[in-house]
Length: 443
Ligand SMILES: [Zn+2]
Image 1 (cartoon, rainbow, N blue to C red):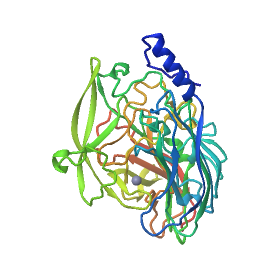
Image 2: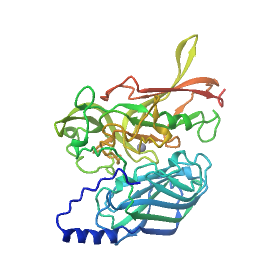
Image 3: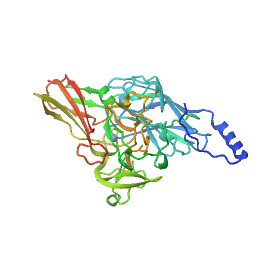
Image 4: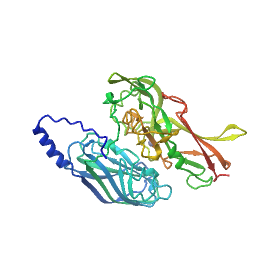
């Protein structure tokens, strides 16, 4: 299983080796920490995160690729789990999504749901309730094995984002072992390890290339009737933006304008302002990285339920098109949707989602995994090489509003990334995804 793991520990003397061996023996045992029986609150009509602490102690002082978090197991009862966003937070504050608003309109319960980096039952957002089995979470638990101390208070963070149902957490179990969640890479190219990274065909400037990952949109959309009580005339659509380029997409606010606000993680600093963003473009120069920045879009604090963090403006646009007498006619255009840019998942050859435009993407990609983006902070956002940023159809704002009186029939759904062409990419000709779609619940 750990074929691609490198252990960079150099051993100088037999004494040191003996100590390391002893530490290894202690640490190699899997250890599970848990919490049981917690009532889960309903939506309070205001932003609220329920924090469920899990005490962890007696572990090695570093969670990394050698020893760290392996899996998280969850059992909870809730009559409508798509109300729930559930995250796991490490003692140092690093937070990842386990599952966010999955289960569709009527799904109930998570029963013995185990989250692992390479869960054999696939992505949790493509699974079915009650999700009994081993799933890949909506975020990347590998980010929790970042070298920080795992001892201390972990927190399960539960947000109920829609009123009407409350739930009950039977148990949460967090397991640490010598099979930690870690990204499988052919070469450990990273911003800290430029020597393992490659130049592009056209030179050493490493540009991102953004595409819609077709699998999610093709499998996950739902039309609501014009007279639906809750979502009238909405066409809800999952969209994941993948980066198949040679370099990461990375943006951060112009610190000249923000007054240097953003050197630390500012995900909890709420402001009403819009900030100018700079895109950082990396180049490989010998065995190190250089970079340049370019003025690009804007970022603001999004306070819709389930978000409460910073979003990049005008990130995608959704449209319905009809071909009339061979001509393309725009029938309906949504307002532009803003996104928090972060790597929620990695394209991986073992998952169906890795097929894009007839080509399989995954760990064989040059510079796979380059760039780490796991927070919706003001400080820095982006999408790693080979990573994608997934927005599920139940997320607030993730829909196309069909106008009153919209005619049923066959249409082409188009989703365009960066419709205002503000971000630098190696290929902007593959930014629009399209598929045929049947509208049948309107007029
Ligand atoms: Zn958001």
